[in-house]
Image 1 (cartoon, rainbow, N blue to C red):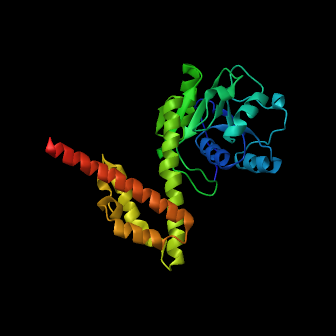
Image 2 (spheres, rainbow, N blue to C red):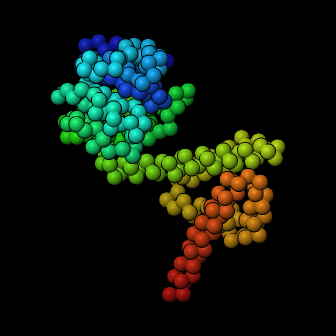
Image 3 (cartoon, one colour):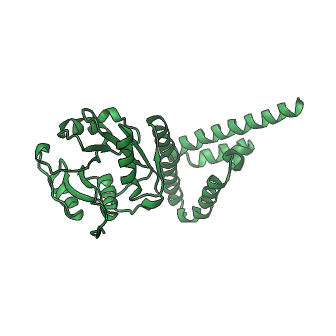
Length: 280
């Protein structure tokens, strides 16, 4: 729950306006206010949602006229990628103000006509009902100029110990990697769990082996060397049998075949390289 911060004789808190009222707005809004920022207003296309978030952040819901919004140091666009440009165009341009978005795949040019702008993107899955360990969450920051970048980085450091000043190419690469490693993995886990439950099994018993996978990820320099299972051994008989077992669940069946084929090709290629090396 958000609590007020007593700043004592420290420098004035950063003043923040939040545009949006979804998972990102709630999670980042609470984190920033908890760690010293002052939210001076919340706007959302859903007035009731704006009122709820504003109440939580000790702020006021804002009207539809940006010209009448209060002074702020930062305006955070916590909206969908498709809505960033439209929202940026509607907001009054003030020389000292930095307008931000928090998209992993977005661009700075989506924030024009604002000369002072930037990005603060958390490498995290954000859901309102689940807490985030913000101090360990990487925050990628970019700015339109060095001064803006430094100010955004200072804001980011108020909630995270892992702040990376980066460029669009690397940030977008991390976003793709996050989708592949987290979103795709979660979908595979969901499909596997549903299938196991249909057989009367308990997916929670997969916890230890998944922890082993996580340990391999954190420890291994070559994850392919840690691969186990019938596909990596070239055991087509077992692969075909298990493929048949999950055939009643089309998505899982397709994933099983795809991953088995890719793992088999990868390890067959590796073994061929080893043989070639030995011959030489």
